Length: 273
Image 1 (tube, rainbow, N blue to C red):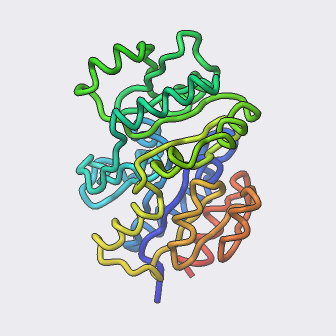
Image 2: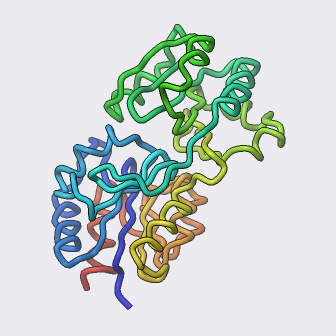
């Protein structure tokens, strides 16, 4: 039975270290799409950080093409019809923010339109994220965020700090809090907290069901812990050659790294042949 849906992480997977999709990968994706295979970008990014790649792959502004963003908190058509929406309540955010302040780690939340942070002295990792996903930063005090909470929806909250500070904050995290969230480490300097139901795997499973596509007809490609749930769900779970050890361990197969056409090579081997 052939692959009918290919789910692809963006950073460290679809794009190389220059944030570009290699020519071979573009060609392979367009061939698969032309053959009727659904190409679904599955990312921790908001839609603002996905649109340019959708445009390049000719997948944007369509009711029949789909994206999973915010690590599975949101799944929608590329014309922005929402299918899955797992958001964080303000009460959960408030308790999480209190913990961040106690631990001394810098933090931010992401909505569909902005990155909000209560840190007047911006974390350099917040600035990096803003550039990476093309989303503006807004500084607001916690009290201001509380007063305006009906004006935005929290897709995810992020600790944005040094590896050492995040390691400690995660190690000290009480079970009463960790049990409330879906938690993924997308980078050494990012620890992401979402609605308990939000994961790339859950969103991909729901989207596949909506499209009438069986699990064994799905291929998923990724390189980091936030990709593991979709790699485990897919009939063919593919780890990039640059993947972290845990992702390499759970994948069915491994392809070349993101700088050497890993996605394109996997599509040619498992989808187009």
